[in-house]
Image 1: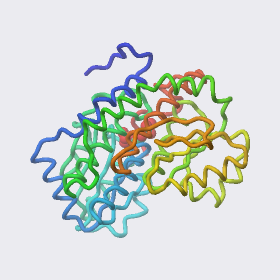
Image 2: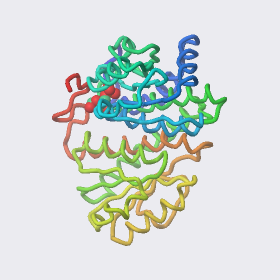
Image 3: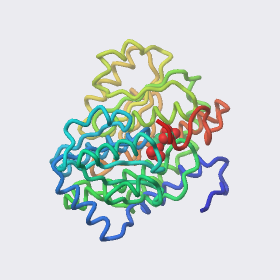
Length: 348
Ligand code: G6P
């Protein structure tokens, strides 16, 4: 396996840049396997999607997108919570388990319990020889190559890309995922890395509390961005469904808060802009991630317009990964191997 850092200072930044090609690699699948995988989802009465950490965020996105593309309920369940949510599982249930390593104990234990209750198991992994690949009736691999950095980066966009191509295949293209178009757009986002580095080192005051706001398909990216900031830079960060702001988090907003607003001009735009006004009024600094500029943003990260709003997560997450990486460097943290964390948590 190719595990040297090449021209890059850390595995994490190398892996962030590898997303230019790994999103494409994720969608090359053996015909008979992807067919059975898709047929199993199409025939399911009841679909549960599970994973841990970043792979749980993929589960949230897959569930929202699955529901929209197939007009069928998908239920996301955190792998660590799975055993408390077993009551509806039966032989018409399909459990789709998502894991980069395929060795996460919580995920393996969820699939074991689900199988005992009669469910069929599908998995999406990066390591094709892993325990989770073997535990499934059908397993697809995202072909990202080794991910060494403890915090997941390329495996996340690979998982989302594969899930989208599966859903497109079943629905006759309702998501409209085009691997070449997505790869081009990610490449453009990565070309802006110096601007993100500047944002961290020059534009942003010292940050202690970061909030990320997003609705709908952007909410899982708010969670994923916050997870990256915690893992890589040891900064307190919180992803918030923007509509929940008024139910509590607004009390925390003051001039020391830095708030990322995930706000492309899709059907969440107007409501999320109102949320941005709410926090701005309390003095918070706002970083907009959008394809349209607005005076309300203290800084803006431009993303391209996407044909279908479900595709935004694949470009929105890139500046958040980069921001977390540069923030780790600024905080003198080794981004590849954060304290107290393991790449693969094989104990419960
Ligand atoms: C660990 C890692 C996370 C990862 C999670 C799930 O906690 O530090 O980055 O998202 O495990 O890993 P998996 O291999 O199951 O995707």
